Length: 260
Image (cartoon, rainbow, N blue to C red; front, top):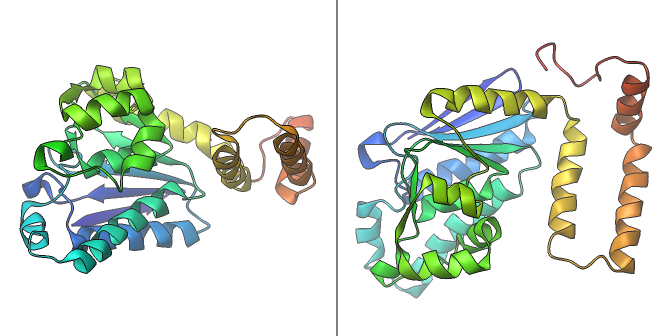
């Protein structure tokens, strides 16, 4: 159901339900939440790569799970939706850099996984669909991440039409950070990982928090003061001092592996 491989500071989390195109059910959602929390607590892990086994990245909700949900009352549906929302929030708030490896179709809830990652690298074989409207539903739990990724204008179109769009369009509107040939997918991700491993782990966590704080806000006096406070704070931190010292001394910082 879920494969987790940890090596050289990298955690590779792979959805492993190829027989159902890696579709979600309650068990997979629970497993993902647990995996993300364990990775967050593991100081040896510096970068997270999220992938899917088989022809699809993630086809959204599992049909058998949908059949069970059809008989749920409001309270059951709320608990079910909260579990999915919490899993996506755990991924989104991960203090370590996250990369989505998108090699095939991404439908419905699967788009939430891609959008909640910091970087999404895809191939021309990838295609996307926010299909909820055609089921009389709404992409509510994934909306904070998908709207942030593609913007409100594009979300209005694709949430409402539920049309399929290809990898080139996903790249144009921001759902994909990079679009590369299939043969170059893993090498492109490895290049990104190399850049990420050269950054300070505490700096990455603070940068991700900074983006959440600054994005969408006007550069008013309180925000300017907050950003000044943050840079002063990180400059005097042990990691900040080590980073500046390594630059001045023309050496690698202590957190860099021999590969980075």
